[in-house]
Length: 406
Ligand SMILES: *Cc1c(COP(=O)(O)O)cnc(C)c1O
Image (cartoon, helix red, strand yellow):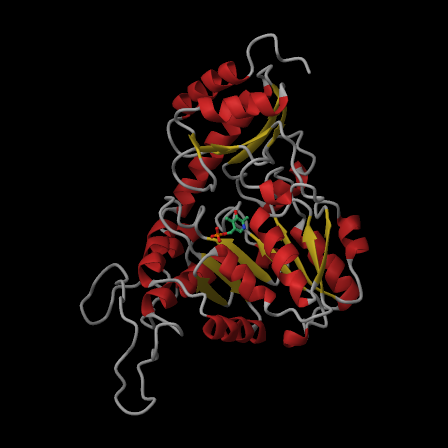
């Protein structure tokens, strides 16, 4: 809706999350953006509209969300999609047969599957490198590379990509101009799902596009599936918007509304997720059943210095390996009571899962395969004492005393 009369760009993140794109509605004064549950809009004459003609193309609840995500990511524009994968698909429509994609070797399983199983059939090549190693990124670039896509923190090992480092490497080699949709410089896309814009803003570090599964932290309550993109380049926006309208991967107005509502509390939630996760990472480190803890907030994390520079907090995702392999890991995820055994992440409630058998099963046999002794936590915002007690009993069941020595 175009009723933003106040310049929110001068205000802080928490204020923008609540207000930008979401001022009271003009006809009724409704404080909250209404759910415009309509598929079409009355025209005063042929093609004379109030900015909306058909709801696949746009919807006022959705446009409020576009303004909101652009504001939080510090981009010129935002777009909303039916899911995170729909958002990524619409970016990938920029690829043509013969183009090459460079992706990270511990990509989200669904992103890997889309590029490996779907895009490959359309003649788009890809290769994978460890994006936390700038030298590997440099060496991975090919003459036909048109797109780089990486997450940071990565999933499930929570490695950190130096976004400014990758951006500098690309501008050294290609200059600063994308060349519109011809992409004379490869498009650098950061999947910011694991951090959220409260914690890190990839566009400010030189990424060309930010993509989100808003299903996770932005929605924040495990009650909606939705995807978002933010960026600065207008030609890229037009291309993505054209393909969205052509192919139809649009979110419904209620889902947009749920994400708008979730985003209002993003700052306060991310601070709490991060504080709980830090305590749990420290606690896991001291448990004899645990082999290794992966959390970018730990000083000994190999990319901690980069994380400290580019992130405001370290988010709520913690992974760890345990003694006793698959059997131990399976017993732990089954024994947890407050941590619910489930895929996904980023909600207020804590979740636990086994990446090798669940979220990352589709990467088996590939370079992105994960170990059988790995457990991943999405740390929620319950009381820390209850979370620690639950993990303690689950580890006791999973790795009986004495078994901690493989
Ligand atoms: C969940 C997720 C996606 C896919 O998003 P959906 O909303 O499930 O389609 C993409 N990237 C990351 C990092 C994710 O966690």
